[in-house]
Image (cartoon, rainbow, N blue to C red):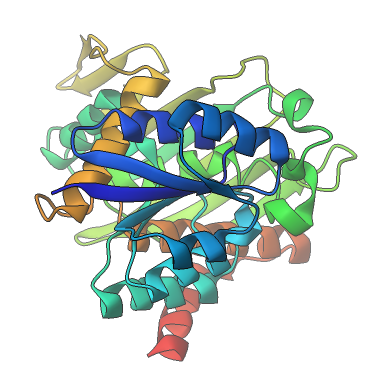
Length: 342
C-alpha cells in the first residue's frame, strides 16, 4: 500500500520530517503547504511536488491518505480537525493543542472517522525511555510512589524573535515547548494520569514562561504517586536538551541522568549501558515509521491522541495554578472536557 502524505508546515522540523517520510518504503510525499515563500521553494526543490500558501486547497486538490503537521502550537486544533474531517490520518507535532476542549474534540473525531491520530512525542521511540518504562513496569522497584524529573535547554536564545515567544501562536513558553516532552515522558514511563497540580512559573521578562516548577499527584491503576517537575528554557545545553528522570518505588529506584540508567534494588545499584540509536533523526524516523505502520493497519498507534490530551490538560492546569496560586484538579477537568464532547 502506497501511503500518500501531504505536509503542513515546511520549516526546519517540517522539512526534516518530510525528508524522513519520503525515505520510508511505500510512502510518497505529494504536496506541502506553508505561508513562507522560502520554505515552499526549498520543499519544491527537495521533493519536486506542488506547494501551497494555505493548506485547505492542498487537501482539496490531492488524493491523500495522511498528513504531517509541524506548525505553531495554536494552529494545530484547526488544522488537525480539517484533516480528520476529510478522513485523513494525522501525525501532529507536540503539543497536540493548547486547549483541553479542542484536544477532547480531536480524540473523539479521530475515533468517529476511524483515523490514526499520532502525537509527535518521540521519547516513546527512544530506547532509553523504553527501557525506563520497562524497568518500572517489571516490578523490580516495587510500587512506584515518587518521581522527580527536570529538563533544561538553551531555548530562550534560539526562541527570541520567533513565534515560540508569541503566546498567540505558541500558547505558552518552554513548558508547552520542549517541556511538553518531559511531561509526556513522566506520565508514559510511569503509567500514570495527572490528578492535581500546583505550580510556579517565571517569564524572565518575556511574554511567555521560561522557568516552571510543578508539584503533582498522579494516579496509577494500583495506587498513586507524588512527583515534582522542573523545566528551564535558559539552561546551558542546546540545541538538544539536558534532562533527568528519577522514580522511587517500595523496593528500589530507577534513575536516568541523561547518560546512564541505574536501578537500585536490595541495597545494590546496577548501571545499564545506554542503548544505541538514540540520535534525534534516528528516533524521529522510528516515530514516523510507527505512524505509517499504524496507517497501514500493521500496528496500534504508539502515541494516540489520549497521550496528547493528558499533557494538554496538565499544562493548562499548571498555568492556571501558577497564576492563581492554588492547586488544580486536573482529573476533574479531563472528565468535564470529555463530558462536554460526548
